[in-house]
Length: 259
Image (cartoon, rainbow, N blue to C red; front, side, top):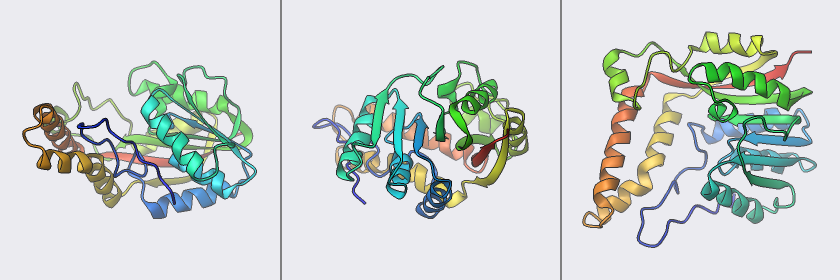
């Protein structure tokens, strides 16, 4: 499968060239998701916070009559998505748009993807943004459609020491547990058709690939003018990962609108 990766400016560290998906999603799980979602026969696909829209493009490949729209605010990722669509002969069926998802009028669509991007649908602080995002997703999907939500959750309550090592101002209230997340989906007007969670191997592959290209660049360019800030960024992210490793989970919820 052709994938035109993001090219960094000359002399700069590369960016996310090792990632196929921008999240802990393995090839076997991606294939399973595509098969299940394609089986519902969507003709329209909406990808919220799409990045380069890899899963959307795979669904369009599996469903030749479908068209898709991905929206995101990262122009570099959107450009990668357009290049990939062109390389796979999907440019006439896949649109990548640089715009906010807040109060978007892009729906309703037969299939709505929102993978690690619920924050793009709400201005609320965590974890209230999840409730608002679920309500927005219910309005963006057709009554006979599906939503695939990829959402973070606590596998267990993090300790104060773990929280201190995570992202700035991390709090035990930043995420719900999985049971609460499912209850919120039901309250927003969905029934959970399928519940699955990223496993440790998927997390390790994602987190390693997230930094691997830059780690290699730094090892080969220790005296580059950008090396000090690059080293600080890599070390900081690795320390954060070690703090939420085994604590932060990601659920993939296939949701059916309740009539």
